Image (cartoon, rainbow, N blue to C red; front, side, top):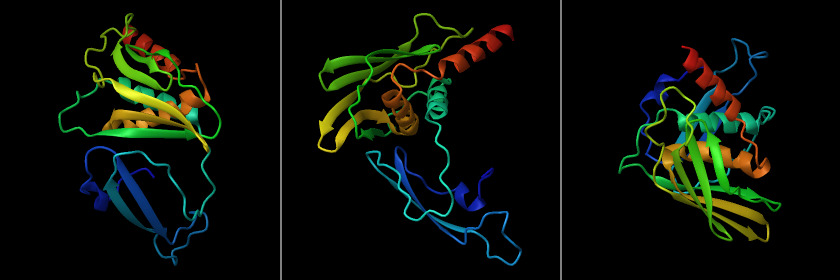
Length: 209
C-alpha cells in the first residue's frame, strides 16, 4: 500500500519459499472511513514450506483485483534476468506447483529473454529439463555474465482425475514466485513471450546512452 510498517521491518523470515497467512480486522474503504472508526489492524503468520500451495481467501471484504497474467509474467522474467546474485550453498530449493483442470502442454525449446535463454528439453513423455544459459546473440551492450541459476531443474507434468499438475522441482526459493508466474502464462498462452518487447526497448536505451 505504498510503504512498509515499522513493525514488519525486522520480522525474521526463513530463506526459501514461505507461506503467509494474513488476518485483518476493522477494514473499511477509505471513502467511508471517519475519524471515529477504529484503525485497520493486521496479524501476520509466516512459516517455511518446501512446496508452493495455492492462495485462498477465507473471508473477502473487497472486490477481487483484476488479474493480468501477461504483465505478471513480464515482471517475473525481468526480475530473473537482472544482474543476479549467484546462488549460495544456503539457498533453499523448493517445488513450484501449477494445476489446470483441462489438458495442457509444457513448452519444449528455448524461451528467449534478452541476454538469457531458458532451455526446456524433453527427458521423457512427462519430464522436462529446465536450464538457463547466456543467449547466443546478446542484445545488451554489456552481456549477461552471471546466470540467475546455473543448476538444471526438473519439470514434471502429470494427469490425474481432477486435471493436470505441473511440478517444477529444484527451484531456488527466492525465485519461486517469479517462476510460478512465468508458468501461469506459459500454460495458458503457449508461444507468447510478453517480456521480449520490454527487454528490446531497455537494450536500445542502453545502447543509446
